[in-house]
Structures are given as structure tokens and as C-alpha cells.
Length: 239
Image (cartoon, rainbow, N blue to C red; front, top):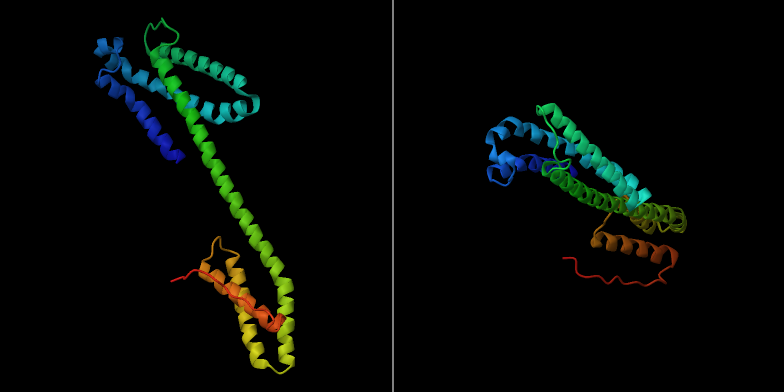
């Protein structure tokens, strides 16, 4: 998102003056003197590249470090000082490009309007970027929380439940009920395998959850409660 936005924004930003010039949208001496535009216009447009560092200074330095830590007043003062520095840099570069250049107005529309626009977009860009980062962080924290809960559940169910079931299966073998022992050992092994598999997933289907719950309750009913446990799983039709 950020890369695409920056590419589109800066592309439009640099071609906009040319489109405005062709449409008569710049009512200045540039329009009244086409030869001046042909000779000097490309250099003036190139000077707009100075707004690129202004954009990132505001979005990556002033807003996260000054605005958040020092407050609005310090941020506005810092932003004004930065803008003054960029205005001076604009005039200095124009002195290098344009022969006998003398600034009649310190702040001209060619400097002020793009600068204000770039600052406004950089503020919006930072706010949206922070919001996207916050959402991603929340999702990551939620994913880690669910993973921790599943890991904790797996750690809790394994020792206690395994000990009881294996003890019960051992009792079946000792009493000569080998077929029952074999059947419930297979159910227990399948249930434990699913426990390990599901703990690595963020979501499981309702059908998988019901199958796991049915197997878990059946094992407890037969091996722990000796048929004294009755249960019924009520769920919507899956098909």
C-alpha cells in the first residue's frame, strides 16, 4: 500500500504543473512568456523535488518524534522552521539556475502551494500508515494470543488426560478385554494426533470440532466414568 501510494502520488505531483500549463491553469508570467517556460520551466519543475525530503521529514521525523513526544506546539514550531529552511533552499537553487535572479517575493505560489499540499498529504499518509500498522499489530497480537492459548490447552490436556486414559487402557488389558483396549487405544491415538494438528491452526471447521469433542467424551464415558456419563451433541446440519 505505502509503496504504491508514494509512486502514484509523486508521479501525479510532478506531471500536474505540465498539465496545468497546457490547460492555462497557471495565470502568471510563465503563461505570458512561453519562451520563458521553455527555457526555465523544466528547471522550476525539477526544484519541486525539494518537496520529497520535506514530505518524509514531516511524516517520518516531525510527526512520530516531535508531535507525539513534545506536543502540537513544538511540532508546529518545528514545521515552520523546516519550511523556512526549504523556502531559503528554493531561492538559493533558483539563484544557481536563473541568471540575475532576484527574489521579489520570499513566498511565491510556486513555492508555497506545493509545499502546503505536500505537508497535508504527508500528514494524511502518516495517519493512515499508523492506522494500518496498528491494525496489523493488533492482528499479530491476537494471533499470538490464540496460539498461546492453544499451546497452553495442549500442555494442560496432555499430562493429566494421557495418564488417566493410559491407566484405564492398562486396566482393560489386565482384565483380558484386549479388543476394547485396542479400540480405545486407537481412538485415543487419533484424538491426540488431532490435538497436535489443530493446535497449529488458527481455525478449525465445526465438523472437525464436533468429531474431536465426540471422541473425547466417548473415551471419558467408557474409561473414566464407566458408562455413567451420558451426552448429546446438538449442532446444525453440516451438509
